[in-house]
Length: 299
Ligand code: C2E
Ligand code: CA
Ligand code: CA
Image (cartoon, rainbow, N blue to C red):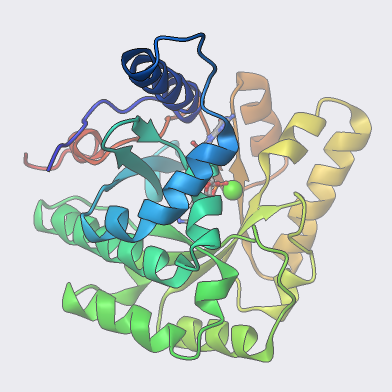
């Protein structure tokens, strides 16, 4: 199996993946027809991904990237968010915004999320075996996966296969699909929490994530979306950010600030009393080997 080890930042990589797709098709078309060429339309790429998604999972074509999360007070790394990248056989590295719609379209969200969770558990096992001290790794899950009847049992089973204490794993609830809350979903989160996993609410303040989630579910950590930090460049934006932070803390949650890119933003979230930070200012998502090295693991 071909492995592409060149990990780049999300933004750069997404551009490169699109560029690679363009070049590949340009070359192919040139060989076949020799006529004037156009970039691959997004629709075509998505259709191709939908069709090949079962194989991409089966042949383990996905890689993990880890973005460290820091304790804002000490600056030390407390955990890491696991993000996935598709190592496409012809088009190179493809980023989640490009392949997740295909995962959804193919009806493969539960399969995909469990596959990435299994890889996350394997990585956590490796970190522990190499003596790395890390509070947790968090993994993104779709609501669809977390609404399945056996959700809590499945997660426990996978974590147990790797002999992991459940509290070193966090479930990030991402809300890409605008599904309404089901009773099953709420019940599952209670079971997942009871099983000892941490629960993070992702992207608060963006799109479909609702503040009601903070008291409807057993939440440990609230991740305030990057868009809100970008809006915190004037008084009103800062008041709104602090208000959300206070609400989350009053409801018993810790607050993680997403998308910290500047020293000014760092100072603001620290002064606002937020607990954790994640963003390009601290660390970009990195390949797992690099993360192991950063954490001082034995290689
Ligand atoms: P997310 O969960 O909000 O993850 C953070 C995204 O923001 C990542 O993009 C990360 O590279 C980017 N990011 C981190 N810090 C900064 C910053 O300071 N500035 C900017 N501009 N961006 C920053 P990525 O890896 O492209 O992931 C996009 C989204 O795809 C994720 O957003 C998550 O919702 C979803 N996703 C990623 N991996 C998985 C997965 O394995 N399973 C599922 N279900 N969803 C995933
Ligand atoms: Ca996330
Ligand atoms: Ca997020």
